[in-house]
Length: 430
Image 1 (cartoon, rainbow, N blue to C red):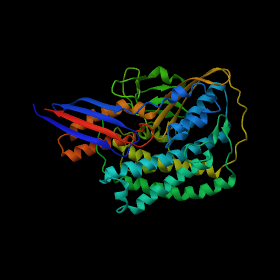
Image 2 (image 1 turned 60 degrees about the vertical axis):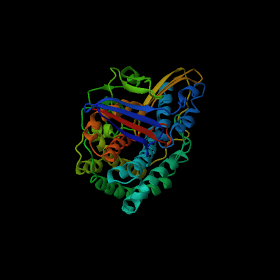
Image 3 (image 1 turned 90 degrees about the horizontal axis):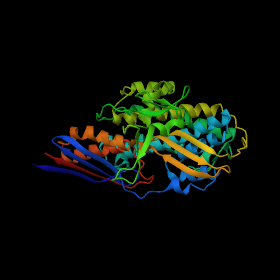
Image 4 (image 1 turned 120 degrees about the horizontal axis):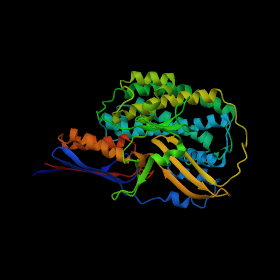
């Protein structure tokens, strides 16, 4: 028996520290593990004893790239628990805030983390020389997303502008008029980006998988809706824990979320586009059709096109909100806490983000459950590797290594919400 080892000691361009171990026997993957070995951050534990007023300022610290998603899931859960209803203008403003986060996060991934993979560069720094116009376009749109979060959240990182029931300080009409002018230019940049990335050579890793996301009857899913899947699931958010469970696996410090039967599932931009294509803006739908990728797509590598399409949609929706803006009532509804449970699921840039809180009669958190997108994608990543590695295992070492790195980075895993490294090892036994 001969044995071949392919090792990737450090997978760059991901957030967090982890490891991937793959064993190939007789041309088939006999074991694949996506392990996360960073120390637990214990957010669920130290939220206990905090008040609902503190919640919107605490949970954004979980992730510096997608703080709005954590903020929105937490705020929606509290509002559900206390029976708080927000007006339509506040609701639209929250969607605009979410558009800003999707823009800054998607563009960070597309240009700085993923594009170098598809174009054969080690980093965006080495890519700039050959693609200066494209990189500047991406950075410009990312700044636009950051500035939207800054406008509504008070700052671009760890925003503090949101509270249970509304905003602390809504923007002015002149603020939104200036934003609208920038969004018009951003729309042109977004359409050019889809065209450019449609020319990327996408590996094929198509196979049967279950896609899961929110779905709303009249809008593209961000903050509200029901949980649906490509396998026929359609449930309210407050039944999420009846259908999805977290497991502790011995090789990872992160809990791994699966369906009740232990099945993997896929969350993220590709799941959203697959399940909600008709809710995209008309121009986003047209850009998707012109991209060469047919949606729904079962090839996880087409996620980069799904992200680019969502960028077009975000700019379209943000422009519509900005041009029709009327400030919401301030300070908004009076929030009276009560004992109860609140659950919410919103769509973070990387996929569905679930929060559930148990409050006492003073509005103090007594239990918290947070299930981020990467926890839900962990098992699907392992299954993807099982399918894909046999296709590349006989290639030259560097190429096989690169293909495995691409597959993991394709999910844009947020392992600890700070950029570190992932160790990857593939063991081949013949």
